[in-house]
Image (cartoon, rainbow, N blue to C red):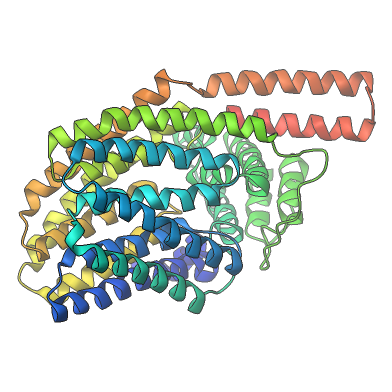
Length: 496
């Protein structure tokens, strides 16, 4: 029976159900916030836009703040709630002034990206101001509703923080469990390859960077080093499958935790397990002295370049989105900003943009079908919205496209419940998303482009320098060997 395989599939996708718990936390925070604020608005005859704004803030805090410890989560959530207040204040001050509001949106968002030089968490906190500002303008919140809107934002932040505190169950799902799921999926691929999987599929897996590798690389620090190890492991595993190496079966057993892998792949797997990423308890050891993070001035330069890209993309995408539809321009903002969020090269931006558009199409069609089937049954529609909110967060680790599909279907049902014409809204959603993603990609190609070919060339230069140091034994031999291993890992990660 098909459902008999479901527990095994879930074990591979989400070991320990940590991603399910995380998705449940975000859904619970969003639903609880909107429920509290909706009832308050109905009882006191207040506009529902405040309830939507509060739920949006709660959703943002739950979705984007993914620190590895509870203390960091609480600290960032409280800081983000405080930072959201100036964004709301600016929106109230500029009520009705759409063009200045678009300009302020561009400046606030670009400034937030500069904080990536310090940490990804600081960027997330800083983005709360622009996110709150955008949706306060989008929802047309006026100065007359200032007190209600302020209370809604504070309730959203408080509920999101409280839910995370009450439902906290350990490390972020983007770390140990994510890597374990990756290893299990790689094991499943090797077993399919042994049974005759198409060679084209094997070569495609070898050539493309996976979402897990991208997420860990974007997190920086120790996660980025593990991402490089995963890239090397994937390349070795697919090479073994393409060459019909019998060692591939042993590697599949080792990835499942049932055996040992010999050779280069086994050494890489041992490194991953030594870091604690393939064990039940996740440890994040300090970075070794011989492989420090880039200097602050380098990180600041990279963050400033990305901020310039974001500013230019929004300077084009926001007026374009407003031209497409004056009431839905925020969707163009989200598309342009998020394709540049957490991506490295222009190729990564293209892939993420395409997945966002593809997911929007799938979700739009699915949302139309679901809304048509459930029309008039409010209770079932609301339950479906809650389930889709859960699925949107649950899928974000496994597939960006399916995450977008669930989010878009959720919007279709929400607009259906609100009495809006769903087909026209979904058409606007697709147009705004396509415009924002396209602008983001064009800017990433034209301004400070970081391409995979250039990254591979730089990595090759570093590798040759490291080889020269080893051959000449320039300085400490152990340090030179470590630099060589690091340079080889970087080259394999860049060229995979």
